[in-house]
Image (cartoon, rainbow, N blue to C red; front, side, top):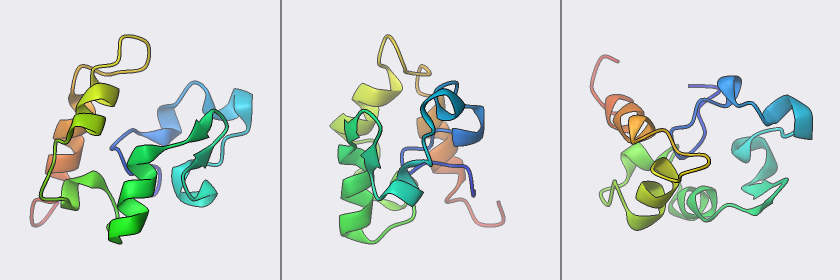
Length: 89
């Protein structure tokens, strides 16, 4: 969970993290190297650890990011978020 972003992305596997010096959305408070992340800001505002804890999962922002043609993962991060909320996992 330490490397999971608010949106369910595995920051440990992010190809941009090392090249940009990105500390991740948690450490940066959602202020990313590319701008402010609406997903991170939403989780911070709601006081939740990740989008899987939100009753609106998957919202339009998570869906757009998960299926983005350049940076999406065809919805795998949504399944990661759902699994993060199952008891015993």
